[in-house]
Length: 159
Image (cartoon, rainbow, N blue to C red; front, side, top):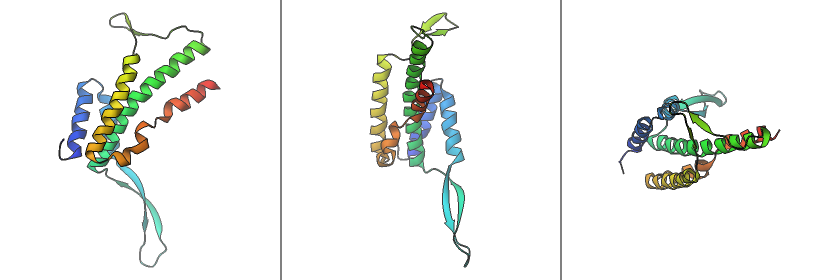
C-alpha cells in the first residue's frame, strides 16, 4: 500500500482513464480541485462572531474517500438506473424487454447481468477493505452505499 493516499487516488484515476471512462476521473478531479465548502466563525476585535463560508482543500485521505465513494456509487447507481428504466419500459410502455443496440457492431448488448451484480458486491468489499487499510473506513461508513438518485427516479416514475 502506498504511503500517501494521494498515490492511490492517482492510480484509480489513471485506471478509470485507461478503461475508457475518463469522464468519471475528470468529474472526480474537478470535485477535488473545487474543494469543499465549510462554514467558519470569525471574530474581528470586539465585534460579534460572524459566520463565513470558505473553501478548503481536501486532505489526501479525504480525496481517497471521495474517489472510493464515487467509483462505487457509479457502479451501484448505473445498475439501479438500468433496472428502473427497464422496469418502467415494461410496466408503463408495455415493452417486454429493453435492449441496447451497439450501432457500430449491430449487436444487442446486455449492460448488466447477474455477474455485474456480483461484481458490484465484490467492488464494495474491495472498497471497504481499501478504506480500512487507509484508515478512512470510519469516515466512509454508511456514506459508501448511499445512492439516492435511483430512489428519486423511482418516485418520479410512480406518479
